Image (cartoon, rainbow, N blue to C red; front, side):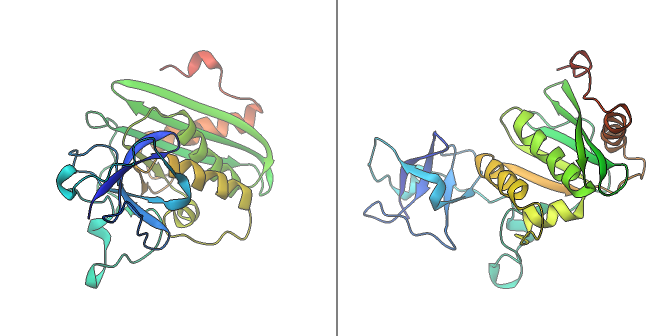
Length: 239
C-alpha cells in the first residue's frame, strides 16, 4: 500500500493509505513510520493524525521493510492477543545501562496507607546520563502513585525509544491490554494520550522488592518523598 505524509502531534510521519491517499484504519488505527528505512513500524490512532501541507501519495517502496514492536507477541493467525500497546516479556536480568540511542526508566509508587500520603520515584538513564525523580503527591492510593510515576517518566524522558520498567501489573494492564479503568479515569486518559505521543514506548514488568537495582532506587525515592512530604531536591536530580 502507498504512503502519505501527515502530522502526529505536530510531527511529520509517513502513514499507510490507498492509491487515492485515503486512510484505511484497522480498529481505528493505521500504520505509521517516523523514518522511511529505520526498520520500525508503529500504529497510531486516526483521531491523532492531521493532514500535512503535502498531499502527495508516495509509492509502497518509499518506506522499507519494518516490524512492529509487538510482532513477537502475536497469537495464531497473526492476530494480536490484546489491543493497545504491548508489554515486552520480562528479561532474565534487568539492564542498568541502555543500548545506544535508547532510554530506560524504572519507576515506582509508594503510599502510607491506601489511601494515604503518596509519592513517586523514578530513574531515567540515557546516553550516559541519569535523571532521578521524587515527588510527593499528597493523599492518594498506591495505584495513583504507580500511574503518576509512569506519566512523569513520559513527560521527563528525552525523545527516543523508551522502555519503562514497573512492578505495577495494574498499570501495565491498563496501558498495554486496553483494560477499562473503573477508577482514576482522568489519569489513565492522560497516560494514554502521552503514550500516543510516544509510540516507541514499551513496558516491562519487574518484580518489586526483589533486589533489582534501579527498581530499588525508584522505590527509595518514592518512599523518601512520602516520609519527607516533599519532592526531591532539584540539585539531586542530576542529568
